[in-house]
Image (spheres, one colour):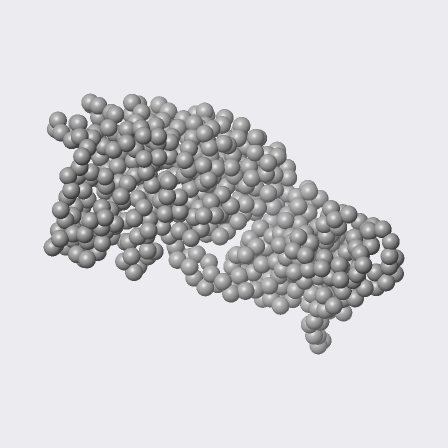
Length: 594
């Protein structure tokens, strides 16, 4: 019997072989538990009345299975787990000690995988034929490829099988060159055995989808059969094998340049976990070079790495201080990266993040309002959206033009952003059912008390000349795509937001004009029935004849007045408080004077 993998190929050459089926470890586990319990005390302090039933209950416990992190146990692992469970049932181990022992199974497997690879290469060199250099190079590539495959799968777990195989070959090259820099590693073309490779990796192939050119396409997905194996492999390589760090870092940089999100994003997340284990090395080798790079994707890679590090409570303050310093840097690339990190919402409290984003987006000479507004919108999709809405209202009402521009740009960007582009399932699980919705409509539907502040901001953008055209296009897009059969049915969001946006006769006339323009569009005319339905969603009125607006009731508010902004404690709309010059754009008084 030989272990599956490349070492089995020469032994089986010219012979017959069969794949040995895995042992029935579940039955073995319960049998060994029974044997351990039979050898222990049957009664006494801490021993339950029915120890076997208690042991079987523990084996099926979700927390214990999660601590194990392996779907299929090997016989030796089943024996160890049986010993741990029996010891706990008999009172010799606490629950914390039981879970700690279970969590050690995956690291033990990783340690076994990576032990002795260099010694095998030395042995292959000594017994190789031909020139020593060529033999050593070929042996290094052959022996290190399984190791590279395990690291590649740990980084890209859940990606397409072809992508993982390609990344494994790249890493094999880097490892072989580091092992023998004077030789060119050989790259076998027809020596892979998918069945034995999956067995040696403890992995499986499943049918799934990957994103290609913006659409989901079918693909074969490869993943570890155990949630704990990826982390165990990365920890083993980074913590116990320091000479391997340099080739792994070079390989990570190659993955950072890959245009496929399924590759570079996974590589960034894995790099973040490595940096959390040794931040000084990770920062110097991965973060700093990427954060100052000219390529946008590399800076996005660095930002994703830092965000992953910031998810660890032990490193959050370090990342916050680092990013805060970057916001004051004269380097535009560092400011851009800092804005990306702040937008993820884990590096700093939301108020501090908004202060730093305002600094990036409004400073003189080298402001970066586009990336700053992107960070603001990402924060708005998080749990502290009320603070973001308040700050946007303050910016749009600010007398300083750069702050106004940043606020207006963020509002327009918010209007064109879909939830799926900025959603964090851990931070905002309530938005999980609205991934294809525009973010304002999703917030208004999922969190109805946000409709008023959102309507205030959108109204300001609609009535400010330098943002009105873009805001009107966004509103038209919402109205046109609502329940058109080609996308999500967003009528619930419109029903929550439009009444807060259309509050008086002036707003009704604006909506009437927009609906009529859409109905008269030569290329995509809006059906009259849908225009009537949209008018009713906004006003609650049933139209008469072919007029989408119907009879407009007379408002009892003073002429030119806007109702108090809902959701901001009765404060006036920001645009209503601005007068004269550029800061008066969008106010009704200035429009009437015009």
